[in-house]
Image (cartoon, rainbow, N blue to C red):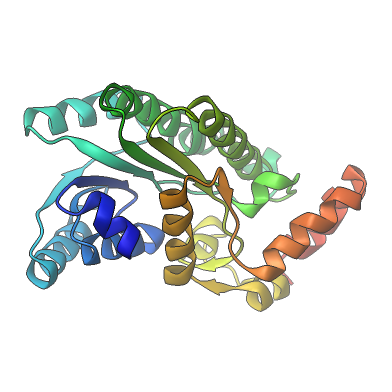
Length: 268
């Protein structure tokens, strides 16, 4: 992408959740434009394989830092590790996250708490830590990953959609606060995307009919997100059907909305 190459070639991009799905797509997109990468996730092996592939293909530098972002100390530890390497992060992609499928009352609290730490608390903490440096330099980019679920109550994904609503509203507000700086902050709100998310969240149960029909491929979705980030768009929603679906919610009573989402998400 020309805009990425123009603004971030030779600079460092930090990507969380870089061991699969969108994380790998973002890594490829930025690497193809000449940016250096810091890959962060729990699993070392897939990130190491990605590092070797991208360094060979694009002649860039890639650092791999295995990190469990469900722990309270992870953001500060990660920041200090990067500082110790003498690296300046000019772009942050807060991609790490997961969802829990099923009735809220059935999910163990420990798993719910872990989801909130990854999807909300540490996303915000990483944003705050790296944003301060970016504002001091008056340059930087932050992309937070939300979801179409952030626009609506989503029974069977109750805590996940609530978390993504937080990310959506937090990022749009932050975008406005930074309007007079050269730091751009955006959120990408994908619909159903082929990343492995649904299979993980639903413990490998079959996808619903709605999920199968509305599925998008992950690489084009990631590209749309990066293009929006380069422009400083507050929030980006890929796909005409996703845009139409969310637009229609403006005319739908919230109680009806919850019923509709439940029927769409329920596995047949």
